[in-house]
Length: 136
Image (cartoon, rainbow, N blue to C red):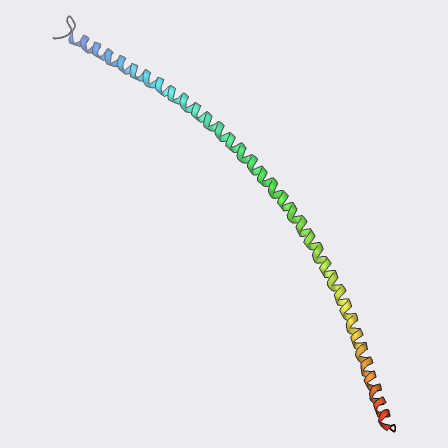
């Protein structure tokens, strides 16, 4: 047979099998190394991603805390505004009560004045009758 001298066909197949086994083992070793490298790169990438995500969560949490603080301050202002509006409303109610009392007093005065005018009209008509009976 050609190529390899002094070897039987079985020895040649064993040699070929050993070479294929070595090549296969070398490929497996290379794949394992590459997978190990990829895993390490992925772990490093995920660690960076986790770090960035933690920073983002912290930043968002701080932002939400600031928004909450501002809303609380805004709510305090609304409470103060509401209290001021309630006080103003109570003052308007008191003013209206005072105006109603004044209106009642004015109505009573108007009734008295109407009575006095009616009496004066009566007196005037009596005087006019008296004057009409007087000689010129």
